[in-house]
Length: 405
Image 1: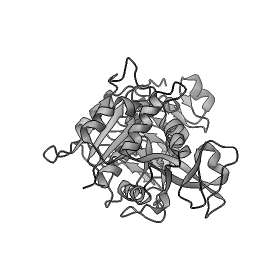
Image 2: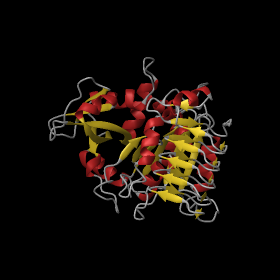
Image 3: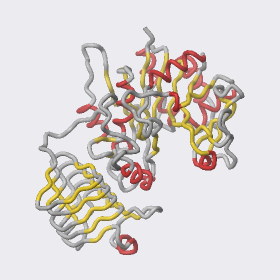
Image 4: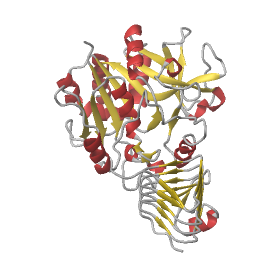
């Protein structure tokens, strides 16, 4: 049988998601009411049948390690595991210097497992993908590395790492970081391939590339910035078109969905994608579930004339005589009489007082909003009170942040 090792890169600091990453690693940030961001990458690997997975962690990893150890318990009898692996300074007195160095310093995992192929996924994107189909495509081409590419409008591709292919549409000819003039696709000139940050490597190719990269003092020790361009230059890299990937239970509307939620605005927008009548990303696909741990709580409760429209409300939460519109509410939250929550994300244990108005906001865990408070209504006032306001006008409160009346 083909042996495949999954490696999830979960050591990112997530500065652009502050204050949500003030007290946790980026992959541990809650998403969709019930999940953590890392649950999407792990679910994609597990659903594809890849059950030997190492999660490389570094910054503020306590809540991430706890979530993995409490949630992702696979069958030890069958030798399956999801294991958080912290930086261990196995190659010298340094913590991880980049994503490539993270794998290089964790070479013992590869030596112990001896896989034929290694699937390397990022931990902070929201999407569904059958990784086994990408591995099959990699084996078919005989490439050293296969890079997952998503089609984006050419006019928007300057925001991404862009893949330029040869005339065959598969061999990668160049790997461009945020190019001013993105190249079009062979079969669609007004689209470009943006790198999704997901890779499949033939093991000996990856090991050799990491060894050479580690010996290069000019390298940034980055997978996308150093390892992939090295293999592109050697003509050993191919692209996998995400559009080819078919996930059971997906719809025409959400089958190509992929979001990098690395900023507060993209994190907020991705939540709004969940709550429409025909969601742009459908969490209710039971044929390809997103796995997580659920607290032992009763179902959500709506009382005293509550009005809830186009929203997700998780277990243990109560909406009492309040209106909730186009929002996601986590577990054990309370929205009191006369409050209005619009286009917002409330994480666990948030309390919204009577008559408060929450608009275009993200409120982290354990925040108590007092009666009559206004959040997201006046950005100047939000900033004066110490709240974060994103470039796109989303007001963000950190975990447990006090709110004065």
